Image 1 (cartoon, rainbow, N blue to C red):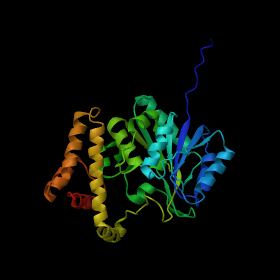
Image 2: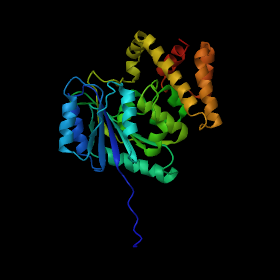
Image 3: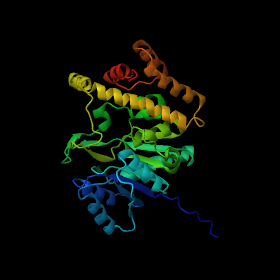
Image 4: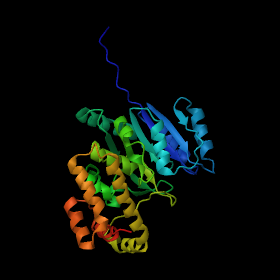
Length: 325
């Protein structure tokens, strides 16, 4: 024996959920193939596309037969959240990256995220659920830059990802910019059907039961093309009147979204009740009670528990729309 130590396994499973994505998918796949971190495996599951998405996936698999797995089950259309949940359940790598079908990854995306995630593991251990996420460059359909920072464009504060109370009302973690360790994947599964989003759910798990960190460097080009499931909306003081009109016009839908956030918090508390600290259980219970209160009490309760989205307009909409439906 020479005392040599096996190098740590740095394999990353890239989880790609597709649905009618033929327009941009090939470009995304090429950006994956060009990653500076070469130890990746692509797990893809199509959610019932009617275009050429599956053919593009199979052509990429033919070029990289040992690095691409297409999950071909008989469960049909699961929806975005459950499609990602299914992909997570099929993964067995030490690390997992979520992937959208219409972006373009920068060459160092995986390498940079993994370096940060391993630093978290060094500090907290591999058994702790850990999450790393980065900023994004906002681009249009032709990859022309709309804004160099998705966070600044949206008025988001990435440090809120470490505060469970703030994360309950506003998700600041974008799935396609995220990297998870194995402990977080296992702790988050299965993602419940009524979770608002796969990235929001894993961010809540990391905030309540683990650790997270953000990388200021943008890891990808986040394409906006009019068909995004979740798109970007600019947060700017000069755009306040326009945004106010949009929010008022969509007020009913906003109320449903906020009501679903409270339901997500209830499901989260029930799922992890035995693992949460007494303080976090109390905070979640207080948060769930906010919709039952009148407007003055909702304001007071939100202030006391720190369940505030950042930004004045977001705060106003939250307290106004959080009344029980």
